[in-house]
Amino acid sequence: MGEVLHAGALVATAAGACCVAADRPASRVRELLIAAVMLLAMGDMVVGGGRVPAVFWAAALLVAALISVAPGPARRGAGRRMRAFDALGAVLMAALLLAAHVPASPGSSHHGAGALPLVLLTLVGVAAYAVGGVVLFATTHRERPLIVRLPPLAMGASAVLMAVPLVVR
View (spheres, rainbow, N blue to C red):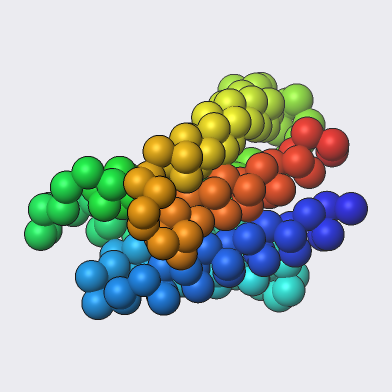
């Protein structure tokens, strides 16, 4: 069941990435970077069997998030919110990858806490991110094309699909 959910998350991420790529790619290079790294990381996990360590993908996602929010040409309103949402999505995906790959036993770390705190914090983040995606989708101006409004919804769905196996373990 976990593989099916992860494949669904990969499809949702790909749909969001396609929307970003189709919406004036020259002005959304930073968002495309995050989408590409997410697709590569998820593709490695779902299709490639995790050949690249999750820690590498988490680091790559964090670097992409930092690049995404680095100072640059200032956009206003929805553009800045979307950029911040994309960066938060990259951070959340890094946490999801790490939470999915840490040992689940209670004494697995030298502090004896195991994965539970990371998993709980990640699940709270996923819930907040999914709600944020719905809010961004609903509050982005209706006159804007669907292709501009759809990526936050797709990313929220992807995060939820990636988090379900953490709950069902």
